[in-house]
Length: 272
Image (cartoon, rainbow, N blue to C red; front, side):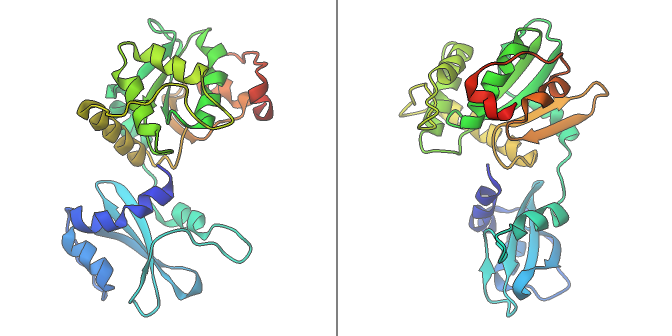
């Protein structure tokens, strides 16, 4: 889920956060409500235009909000300076603790992924969080195909946040008798003009599929992934890496640990 989606959950967090802390300084009433409900104030900082930034946490997930100088109004959303740059991005990098992907790797391995490529004895493994309507996820699928043929296993973990049809399409893949074939159908029939996955959405996803998508979405939050595709892999030294977005094709050998593979798909031309 993009950072904007995390910020949008702040109102919900006021009702359901479960841990308690007390701050030494007077709190804006909205922040006080969150603390009383169990939120933890991780840090505060001086933001632009006399705003005060607040980083709140819940179960390892972080929300960043801003209060006005008089403490009466709370702002949730992006801050853009007069040159058009994102101040929120700067504050996020500086003040929000980074997740430890290594601590979450076991959770990735236990997730209900859809494996493609070399299934029995892969030479390397890459996990990918994907939305079935995500165009860059589709292009990642294309880019990995030559590497799958020489020993890569890609473990696709579906999430649903991008479009209204994402949940139904992701559920259709999860609930299919052959999820691997359903994933391939979604990508082979993908419409790049409309940014639509090729599989037909389920109008009434099962409770099990919805529960699995919630678990996958939570995992995405914990990894700090702001969008899809989110690639997670271990290098030859065992260090865990996370890359959000489609990498340049020249980066795939270092990600996969495999020799560079020829790729002539015109859809990938701008990523060479």
